Image (cartoon, rainbow, N blue to C red; front, top):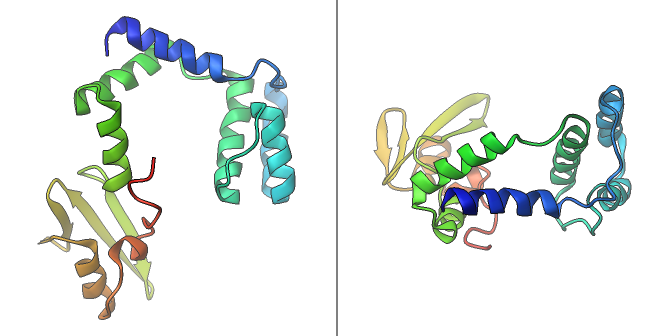
Length: 172
């Protein structure tokens, strides 16, 4: 992606934000964030419509809360600076050569190498490091998360489920 394409992509993202979004005074941010914690799911969905100008996705309540919290702060304090957007795009391009399809599939299918997965089981915290060709747990390499989950629990587990990664992998 060239600098011109990066600038165009940043402009497109800014254009995605609805112009009818309510302004949020910085002094009101904490109150609005606290209200998100107390809101019902129906109230969160209505707030989504107000803040984004479209229907909310059918994701969890936690997702709606976190995205609305970000949007409130974005409207109060401003979004990412163009330099930050450019830097993130450059890092993505360095990672995958600008191939957005590859970037999305990589993110959907497998955590990036270096990612640490943390799971508490029976009061003990277990940390797994993602490697380019597998996983590392307690200094030993493993080919699958299921093998690690079996080592931790003594029973057969789907490793993706055990570590909380069992969303629909590969779905765009």
